[in-house]
Image (cartoon, rainbow, N blue to C red; front, side, top):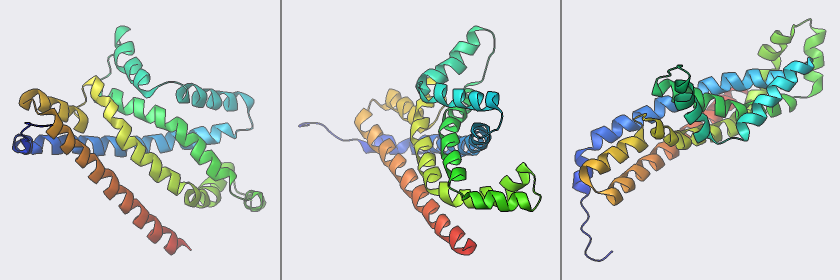
Length: 222
């Protein structure tokens, strides 16, 4: 790029705005992880229900969500529902869309974790007179969590990255703050360089923290 003069100074002058966007990305991702883990747990239990209609309902949810783009789901919640006079604020629409989308993937992750537990564990808890919910809470889920922890961490990193799509419904996350900064400074190269670096720092730091937490957690549980 001969003749191009880099002006990162203009970007760093607006760095606090980018930090606010990064914070929005982080807390939106955290809420999404918690909500989708809860939804995924319910979905996994539904997939294993002894009632056929519940299994079909849970399977239908997973198939529909996993076979439609997240962007379309966000548009449906924010613009589609608004067309029929169901107004959903943009942040809430983003949160619902991300939770519903990731809940489908976590349904399969949690289900795989439950199925990884030996049948003898189920039988032993039944022989102790535990109810279904007691078995899940005290016997199955604590063991399954060790199995699902690595893919759960990967899913969280994916949530952070894919959350950039919420910028299309005017949620001022890091991606949208970067776009707004470009409209003021006209320095797209420098801005996206900084935004990219911020995403890398966030994901690498969080990934390392999750790995460290996992090692300590499971070492204590061993």
